[in-house]
Length: 202
Image 1 (cartoon, rainbow, N blue to C red):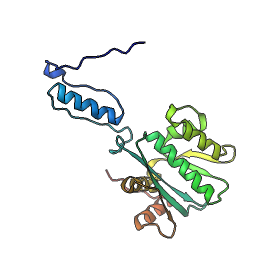
Image 2: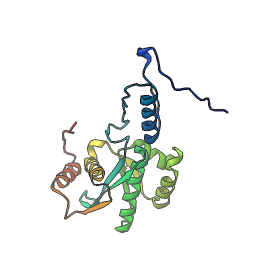
Image 3: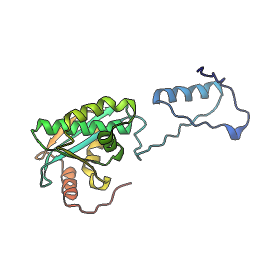
Image 4: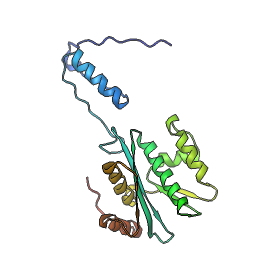
């Protein structure tokens, strides 16, 4: 199969001067610059986030909370994952949580995620090639005959969302013990624990 080379030239019809395509970030910026220079055109990049996260196109982060059987916080974490898809970031956050739980010597795990796709990839297999190493690592550490993984709605997972945002802001891995949780985290832990209603900011 031979790739066809398309000549880049000025589009005379002004109503047709738009293009939609999907590329990696660096390739997209390069293509936009080429269009601007070669076609003498003003180029705007409109980036849509499949998960409603404005920073999805650039970078990803994740976070999680380890609770005991009564819902009390034991430890929380956040991490910055750099350039990767939302699915890979979700899986890496799950992996980080499992590793942390095992480091804390917790023997039976109940993993909750608000990503149905991540759960499906872990329990049923499949998924794109770029997540396979992470998936194998998760399956190696998670005993699906003993441990449980279930879906939780985002409204019940607000602590993890807040931690993921912190990972984005700080751009490194960090853990909080239950004693040194910031006040905002502490209040969300209790809200999530008791299933209290909250208003999600836009």
